[in-house]
Length: 322
Ligand code: DGY
Image 1 (cartoon, rainbow, N blue to C red):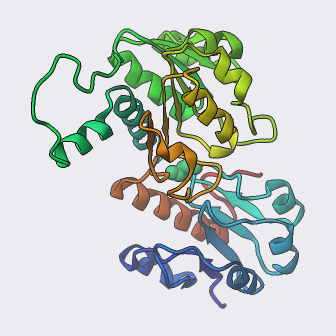
Image 2: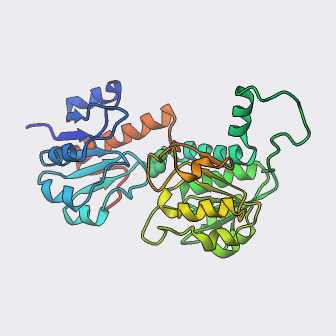
Image 3: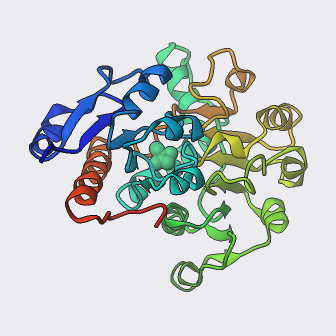
C-alpha cells in the first residue's frame, strides 16, 4: 500500500522529519524563513492526503474545494484562526493544533514582555549600547512596578492561567475575564472573575490572551483604551486582530494608557515604518510566544504524530474538530 502523502508548508529540520519518512511520503517547501507561495500551496493541496501548515497559511474554501484527497490539516500553532474550521469539517477534513506543549513557554514570553515594557528594558539596553550611559541619576530610565500591582487577564485558557501563576509569584492581584468562569484558577490561584469593563478600569496591566474569533475581533478599541488607567500597560500575546492598532496608537500618544507590549500585529510581519513602532513606550516582538527550540520541536513532533496516528489508527491527539 502506498504511504499517505504529506505536504509541509515550511522547511522543518530533517533530523525530526526523517523518522516519519518510513510511514509518510513527506514533501516540504524548501525555505525555512519564507512562507510557501499561495499558488504552490494550492497546487500541492490537490494531491496531498495531509498538510502540515503554519499560522501564516490560509486554509479556506478555495483550498479545500480543490483538495480532493485531503483528509487532515495539522496546524503548527495552538491558534487556528488561519483555518476555516467549519469549511474543513464540511469537506470531511480533520484539523489539529498544538495545545499544552507551548503553554509555559508562551506564558514565559508574555510575562517577559510585560516586564520588558514596565521596566523599559529595550530602551535601557539601547541606551547602554549606544554609549549614552555617562552618569547614574535617580530617575534614569525609571519604569513602573510590577510586584503588588493588578494584572487583568482577558482570556483565561491554558496560557492565561500559566501567566496568572507567574503573576502570583510577583505578588500581583490577578483579575480575569473569560467567556466562562474558571473555578480552578479561582481556587488555586486566587484569580478573581471580573466583568470586562471593570477589569479595564482597575487593572494596571491588561493582558490580552483571548483567541481570535468573530466575537473577539476588534475587542480593544478607543472606548476600551479610554476606560483603562492612564498608567496602564497593555500587553497582547494573542492575535493582532483583537486590537484596533490605530486606536491603540492614539491612546498611547494621547496618554490614555502608558505603554504597550506587543508580540502580535494586525498584519504580520509588521512594516518597520508602522506608526506604533515609532513610539518608545511600545515594545514590539515578532510573534515569538512559543519560540524556544525545545517547544518548537515539540510542536512539530506533535503535528507529525497527529498525522501518523490519523492514517495508522484513525485518531489524533489534539483535534480541533471532531
Ligand atoms: C500559537 O501557537 O497560536 C502562537 O501564536 C504561536 O506562537
